[in-house]
Length: 337
Image (cartoon, rainbow, N blue to C red; front, side, top):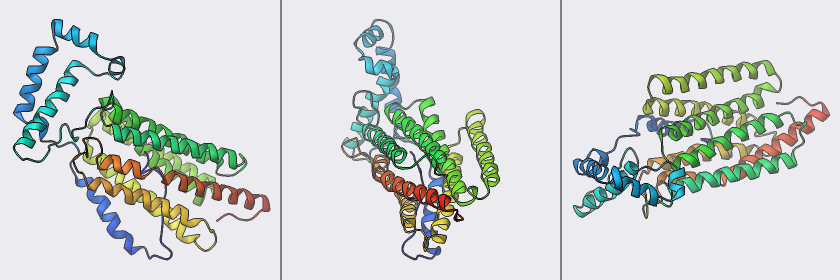
């Protein structure tokens, strides 16, 4: 997940802030891209194929035969006869497009992927799982290295659990795209960004002014509740969701970068935080590539998720260094900046 979009980020040795503007503008452009427009499922040949397949195979004796032959892992992940018809007709349509020399189309807002067992998007599901495992591994290392008395200990543990939850739902969503799993993936990703903002607030303001971080925390909870309520009960607007996530991601990016810049002369590990934030937001630009899946498995989204796996190790290295620093300064009675 995050994912984040899932953490906090970086500056070069001494870069002025203006060079960040191109990155911000490009990220903001993502909000204008249509997320679920697709040509393939609008094709008459695809729709007629699905109708014929459902009428022929998804009733009576043929449906019972399909259900009796269906593997248990397909049943557990909710694959139906209609879903299988859509999958088969997708490849029929792709074959016709290629035979006529046209570009491979998307279906229902996604590229065609070769299903592996019950996994709709095998590479993205695997990448999400590996991100989650990396996050879990580094959380365990953090707990083994940092004493519970460190001022940021519990806040970082909570952030890690929010991140693990997001990567869990990302794995589930890329395994099986349903109404529920899509919403959980989107909402949990938003939660990670908001909690990263809270984490930054606690680190920059809350240690000296806990009331301020508490107030910010309440505002972030209200923002998250409003965001989820609007998308759930009013309209699931993909453009709005993208714009909202880009906006809060920019707040997260700039706040962490300002802290890194202010502490570059006093904290020798500041660059880890800066590099993480810039990597996470910069790697998100891989989504702009948006190419048909290589071997029908590896697309730009999967490449993005795969590229974020090593970032967890650097991010938790920063969190460990900073937590130990805070613990030592607290013991010595030094004012934390």
